Image 1 (cartoon, helix red, strand yellow):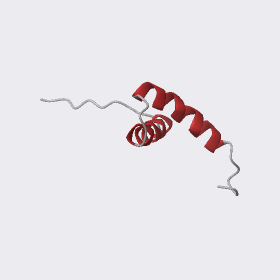
Image 2 (image 1 turned 120 degrees about the vertical axis):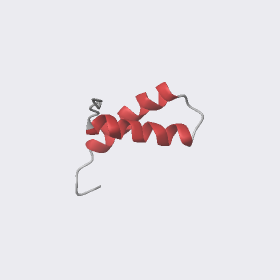
Image 3 (image 1 turned 90 degrees about the vertical axis):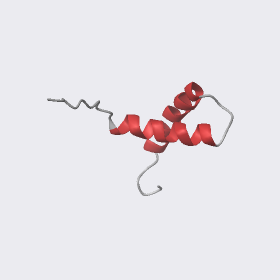
Length: 53
């Protein structure tokens, strides 16, 4: 009997990964720098009022 295992990834971590991927695909920064920048980008976006977004 095979047991499937899965790893939980939060929605926030998925968003960070998505932004980091976009940054690495469209610039010459490395993955670590892209992930760090993605956290800052998402923090800024999360603080924009819903009406403005």
